[in-house]
Image (cartoon, rainbow, N blue to C red; front, top):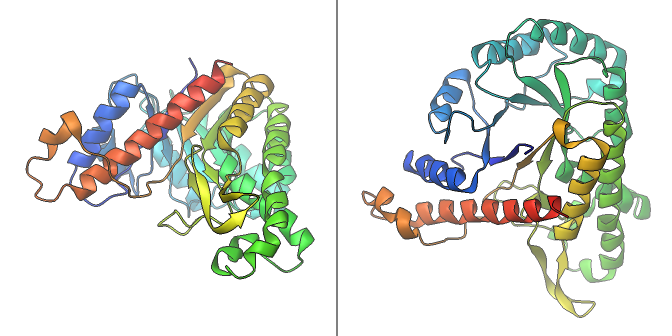
Length: 339
C-alpha cells in the first residue's frame, strides 16, 4: 500500500509525553510520520518516537534551505548521508530562482542529484511548491529534470489552491488580495459571489498540475490539507492547513447559510486522490496530511495515565483533539482511495 503519513510534531506546549501520545495514536492508525526538525540532532530525537522500524518517515527540512545555493546543497547532503536507510524522503521548499533562473536551477539540481546518487540507501529529495510560482513553471522544472533519479516533486494542494484563488480574485478586482477580506467584514456580503468564483478555481488548477507533473514520470509526494481565503482558524496566520471536514463560518447569511465550503472538501480530496493514482501511479505516490492544530480539546480517555504528572491537562487534550482530526482525515482519504 502506498505511504500515508501525517504531520508529527509538538505544535502544542508541553513535555515529550505529547509526542508519546502521538506515537501511540499513529501506531494504532498505521500512519507514517512527516517530521519537521530544526537540526540533524533534533531529527535524531524525533526518530526515537517512530512507532516501528518499518514506519515510513519523511523529513521536511527548514524553509530557509535552498538547493540553488552551495551551502543549501551541503546541508541536504548532510541529512541524506546521516539518515540514509532511516528516512524515506526529504522535502525542501522551491525558491523564486526556479522560475527566474531556470537553467541555473536545473544545473544545481543535477549537481546535487549526482551526489545524492552516491549515497547508498539515500532518501528521495522532494521539491515542494511553496513560493507562489505559476504552477506551470513549477511543472516545467520537473520536465527538465525528468532524468534526475533522486529528485521528486512535492505538490502542496493548499498552497496551489490559495495561489489560484488569489489570482482569480485579482483578475476580478485588480490590486486586491482575497485573503485580506477576512479583515474587511463590511465588504464581504457584496463580494461573496466573487470569493466563491475564486475558491471554485482552486481544484481544477490542482488537478491540472497533478496531470502535468505525472507526465514527467517523477515520484510525487503530496501535502494534503484544505483551506479558504477567509479562514481565521490558524494560530499561525495562514489560510490553509485545515481539515477537509470543516467549513468557514460567516457573520451573515449567504445563500441561506452561515458558512461556506472550503477549497476542496471531501469531494475535492477524492478527486485529488483519484487524479494522483491515475496520472502518477500508486507506486510513485505518497501522501502526508499536513493539517495544523486548531486548539480544541478532546478528553484523553485511556491515555490519561500518560499525563498523570500534569496538573492542567488542557494542552494534552488539545494534542489529542489534533491527533483525532488527523485520524479522521486519514479515514476520509482511505475511503477516497477505495473508490
